[in-house]
Length: 163
Image (cartoon, rainbow, N blue to C red; front, side, top):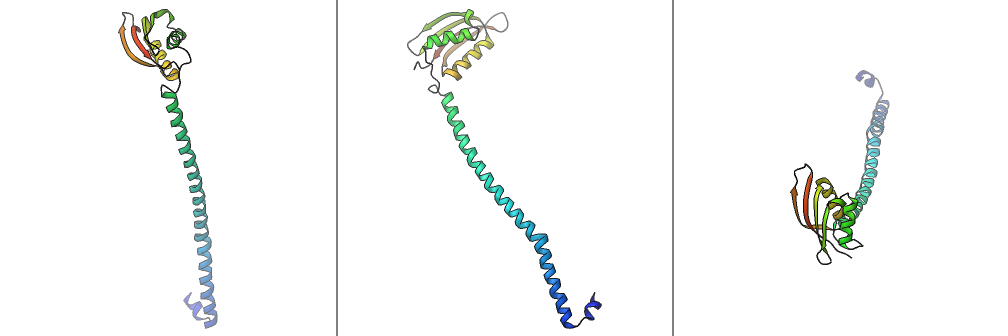
């Protein structure tokens, strides 16, 4: 290569050097600069999309928290009937009707209930349903197991609002 350049006159040599420099700049532009700038533009677009997604997710999280709070607070879901009627009706729906031995009101917002030989799983499901769907909570509870596995005697006091 040196011999080739040495045989060229100075003007041609300068032209080869300039052409080589232009070719190197064009090669750098095509092989490095264009792909890099395209990648930067794609990343900018991705960041903008991710920021929009983050904003939406924050709004959705606030909405979920608001709905959870409304669903879990006693005032979130209040029974439209008396607590006495609600407790009796929901126990029968849960299959505990035959086990109810006593339902006694204690003011407007409390009910004492006694169940005998009730299936423990049904009692737990019933109490969870009262709490989650009607905002009724257990104020006191006493559970005595029976000789037969899975059966219990339960004495409890439910509290809730009748509004």
